[in-house]
Length: 204
Image 1: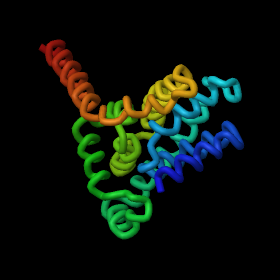
Image 2: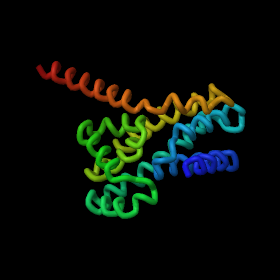
Image 3: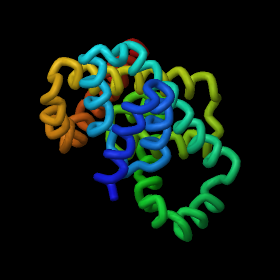
Image 4: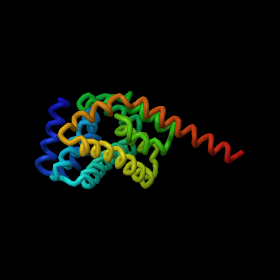
């Protein structure tokens, strides 16, 4: 199923260009099993052939990602935890979404608060579901949007540029972005500890 979706996404981008990228980016956020690691390197490869501009690939990807993030943000904002949980438990299998994944994102949000909206965009699954707890607590939409756009731009830019550089060998990029989640978790934890220590030292 995932292979078929990836093929569909690639054909859509080849057929309609930037609108296709926006839709695929939205779909990748709406349907988490569709991996961006297998989507944006391909788009970068297409840009390397001159059919698309790399900068516009990133812009279109960020637009679609932001719309997808808003969907889950408002799902959390309007439904609340208990109502959304009931829906996910009942219908989540259709989208291959498990409530435990949302709970994990919520734990990330409770631990790191607003900064995880930015850093979470660099972590598989977390980058999708981190929008939900932000909606639960009704985080202000302006900082949510800013952090989402910046984090998404970095992530999409890295993937697309990697595909652009690799050209027809773009598929070799994907394995390097798989299994890196734990590395980013420790990186984020280290950054948070650094700023906490710096703030504590400043207070003293």
